[in-house]
Length: 200
Image (cartoon, rainbow, N blue to C red):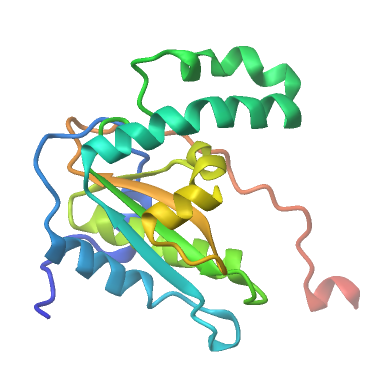
């Protein structure tokens, strides 16, 4: 496989990555997706389990159906876990709202449920995927609100996810439609700074 030309250093890429929720109509090619998945599987993995598997969805009609299924399930889930947050989620009840933000590509990073650190491994793969996408000029966003629907047995079967796998990280992918403004982050919150000299 040809290595893509990347103009940013890894540190520049980390600083440049943003969550993207507005995309151009331009399609992401299968070769590009494959390149990003190759980067994903280079992530660290506890005791070399590499428990991940991937589903690539590039069918907008299916994505719309999944969005319509996911919205009420997410609202029910959030109502149970954080009942006072419901008013902040009202847009999920709007018929025209698409939780995948009209992206043409959704990547599901799934994990073998029996692996001891499956969620950590899958999220490390997700970070590799998202940073690589940023370096290639693409945008990504994790859509956690889709998880209650994506892990329904019927949906997993529809998407080809085995029963012994769980969808961990749903990530939309595409070409950003406009410049993404920088997001201010808090300074590192250091709880303690322990050195040998402090204990002398």
